[in-house]
Image 1 (cartoon, rainbow, N blue to C red):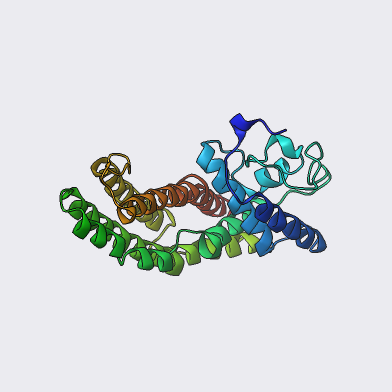
Image 2 (cartoon, rainbow, N blue to C red):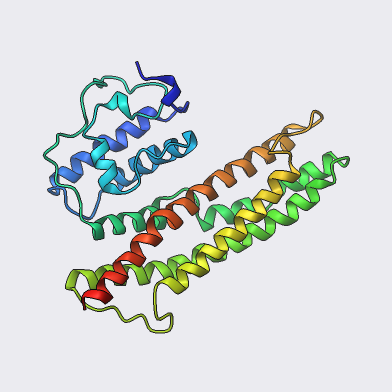
Length: 274
């Protein structure tokens, strides 16, 4: 049995396993080379999200992830229920697998953020409609703090929509350009921004602002705890706000602690060697 102290309760273990097996089969058919199958990326995202919920970072890069798969399932499977029909004492991969290169890892991180993450501009636009918050305010007039919550969330959501669009149309293109330079061992020329550090610092500042706004919302809502007289709409509003904050934390962690440092390191290496 899996140690429940190291588990995260969810209804997604079989879904995750399905993506994982499908992704590994496709990956092996491609001789363990980039591009990575979308199913493998999806499985990695589900597993990483479960680890984030636990506060335990069992892996970050694709190399870490594949290394983890070479250990017994019971040692790292983050869900309470083990998948059906799988021996938990046997690794998903053997130790002969060739681990991916630094640049391939960087591309996977971009794939993760660009096309597969839960936190994206389209979903933010839907949440931004704020119907549930307005309904809750109308139904529960004795809680005027919801007006401040609505105003703060509208601001942070609009800022994050713009933020994600800038990443997709500017920063991620620069990082992919750096990867291309690395393939041909060329010195990068980033006109306008001069260095990838400049747009990265701008995005990090926006991360800080969004985090600060969500911290204010958390304080206003007593850590997203509905009052005793809260209606169902009120409770759902707080749950969605808390889910949004969790997605924001994952987004910031993936970029600030994984993607951005790799991009800066790659650029510095190319400049130094060319």
